[in-house]
Length: 243
Image (cartoon, rainbow, N blue to C red):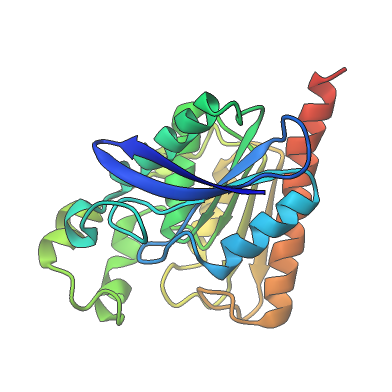
């Protein structure tokens, strides 16, 4: 079952879709999309479907300034703003009675959003794909990219300025994916997250992999490993709490 949910975040009306399995009080994964992407990314749609097949709900929503949500991308995008978005998403799921147990999934900048929000809310498990830790490592590549060349300079110096390296040490149950040859976010980001995070943790570096993991076999492994991670840590904790 799919249900459209609208909620407020710092005055912006955000819109998303929750995919609910045929199961009472399922755990929920909340997805955070990449910088200029949306909740309609193929990765999130496939994850939502497979999570449902395994008794896990999935909530994918558009951050402010993206997709169907309110806001102007160039003016309203920031890591802290997106962190507030996902925190408010957690709040709306609690009000909907769909917050039995929550995990996060974040792609690219969405991974940084999930790391920051998880550190504030003490949420786990977390799965990240190509997550940056510091904005300075991605700004130059972004400026040269098709999506970034038309953005105003202030976007880079203010809105996109962040360093979350001090937010990693208390994270746990985190699974990290990164392409070895990621052309946007250096692979060293995943290694630093892995080295600083608590156990249990796992890192998967895709040999010769790029930023979007365009290799079909690597995409398949990403999906399979992600579903297994959420099954292990969301359903396990739920089963233990029900005894």
